[in-house]
Image 1 (cartoon, rainbow, N blue to C red):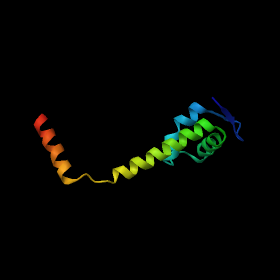
Image 2: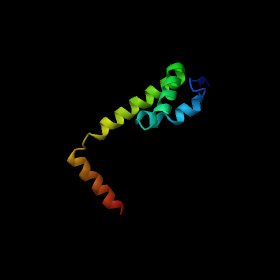
Image 3: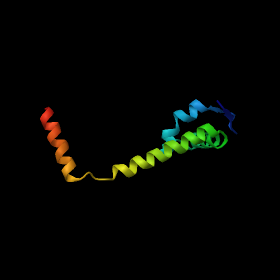
Length: 85
C-alpha cells in the first residue's frame, strides 16, 4: 500500500483512492479531491493500473450498451420469459 502526501498535507491511501475511482472516472469529484486522486494515481503504479482497467471497462460497457439485439433474439427471450410466468 502506498500513502501519498499532497500540497494540502492530506494523505490519500490506496484504499481511499480506489474508493473514489468510479466517481473520478465519472467526473463526479470536487476539484480538490480530483487533484488528490490524480496525484495518487500518478505516483502509485497499482492504483494507476486499476484506474486504467476501470476506465477501459466502463468505456467497453458504454459501447456495448449502444448495440441492439437482433429482433429474433428479442422475440426468443420474450417467449422464454412468458413461458416461465
